[in-house]
Structure formats: C-alpha cells, structure tokens
Length: 386
Image (cartoon, rainbow, N blue to C red; front, side, top):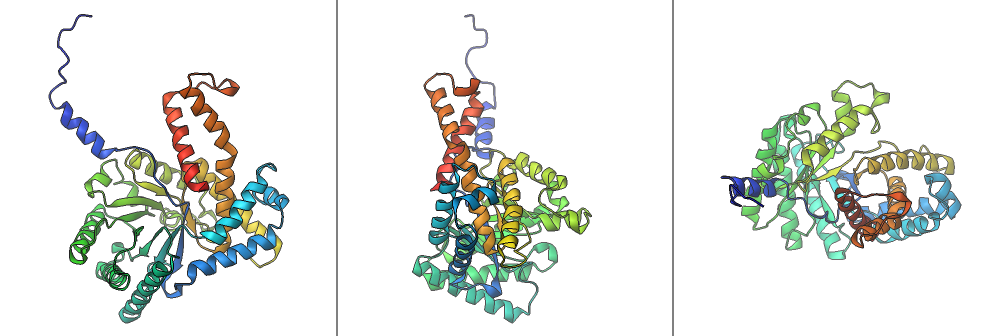
C-alpha cells in the first residue's frame, strides 16, 4: 500500500469529533417510563397513586375476567394473552404509575395567587409523605405554567415553592425529579427556564435539575434541532407532544384533534429527527376520553380505542405517552406488554445469529444498524417487562 499523506488526521478533526460526541452521545437507552400520569394539583394527594391503581385493578378484574377477554379486547394472540393478563394485574397491584406529573397548568387553570401557593405546599407535603411511605413513583414532578401565557413569575414561583418545600419536608430532593415546561413558543424560553433551574440548584444545594419541554405549537417545530439539548447544558431530559394544543393551533376541527391525525405524525417525525442520538426522550400525547359508563361494553370500547393509539405510537417509535384516567393504565400496560412479548424471541434469535455469525431464520439478512436497533429494543423490552 502506498501512502502519500500519512495517517495524520486533517486539521480540526479532533475538535469536530469531540463536538459530535457531545451533541449526539447516542449509547444504550436507559429506563424510560411507558407513560406519564397527569393529575391536577388541587386533586393530588399522597393517596393518588394508590387510588388510581385500585380503580384500574378493579376495572381489569371486572372486565378482563379471563385470557379470552384480553385476546379479544386488545387483539393479543391467544398464546400471549395469559402472560399479558398476568403482567397487567401484577403491575397494577405493584406499580400502577411509573411517572407522575402534578399539574399546575391546563389541568389546573388560573387561580388566585394564595390559592395556588396553598396547593403547591400541599403537593410538596404529599410528595414527602409518599417518599417516606415508599410509594413515590420512579419519576415524578410538577408541570408549571407556560412562559408563553405572559406570567413567567407565577411559573417560577410555583416551581421554586414546590422544590423548596419538598427538600425541606423530605430532607432531600428524591430521585426521579423532572419538571414539565409547556407551550414553548420561543426558543429563548428554554434558555431562561434552564437558568431558573441553575439558580434553584445553587440556592438549595441540590444537583441535576432537569426539565422536559412540550411540543404543542407549530412555532416550536421551527427551532427543534440537533444541538438544542447541548445548548441547554444537558438540562433537557425529554420532549412531549401535546396533541390538542397542536391540532387546535393549526386549525383542525374538533373531531380531527386526535393522535393519529397525519399532522401529528409530521410533528412527531420532526421531533424524532431533531433529537435522534441526543439522549432526549420522546413522549407521545394523550387520549382525552374516559369510559362513558361503568358497563363492560363502555369500558372495553375505551380500552380498544386507547390501545389502538398506544400501539400506533409504539410502532412509530414513541414508547411513552400520557395517561389521563385510571382506565388508561389497563390498556397502556396491556398494549406495551403485548408489543414487546410478540417480538422478543424473534429479536433475540436475530441478535444471537449475528453474534454467532450464522443465518437468522426466515431468510433475514440483518445490517449492523438493524442489529443495534434489535439489541436496543431488547433492552427496552427488558426494562418494560421488568
């Protein structure tokens, strides 16, 4: 082999390569909750998670009495139905909520200052009580008001008061904390909110305060880009899609404001492109519906509707979504478990075939990128199936 310029990299290569690693760290996905449960702050208490779990479990026991109902309602293969049903029942009894958001925004509304201050204090007291009892979800935190509404002071006051009270009552900021920052219409709001978290850390002596932004306006898509997370100093943990604000903002009629609308697909794909490889988690939105009644027909109809949306999100690469009613927990977990169980063995065989340098079954010829995706999917399945 003849060499004319040697093996010295071009000028500036190392700097560019380090910038690449900082911007797109990639790596194996860590545990991510399969959902976020939103509860208005004035209706939140230390018993909320247990109440949601109890109601969801009662619905499952009443309307999924056997494996046949699981197969019929959720479209699960009969061979998988027993495992799915067993896992759902155990999950609802053990950990019905993986991620809890105490909502001081749309689900709460605008209140007199003293009233919101009181609910901030009560919510912090409840969190401290859950921490002491061992019932605080693995991820938790508040959703504060948007800066786009013109009252950033109220948003900051709620966040400051909540975190300060939790630390004072619990003796620390329990692990898993994240704050949701909604309606980000201006990129500068993100930097300003990151600065608020930095100041709060310094004042309270805590570390690692992170936030998730909501993508719920067409204006937001214009400044989603690969270096956004890096520019925020690693404080951006996730991006959550807000279906109803987004579809309203682009003028869709009420009956078309739904997660499976093509306009929502476009927004989610922009989110995927912008945050690919950055480590920022993605979450889909919600279904704003509950069973029309407690009858088996109405409960199962809601489950079918919700399950179809959850399954669609999973197929589009969104492994998290919002749950707004206890009934959603049943269809969420059933759909997630069925999704992973249906593919697990096949994925595992393909990864092993690649590692052992043998042909996979079914004439599959996997590329290295596909194998990495298969391995990541198995890690995600292991975390979800737990």
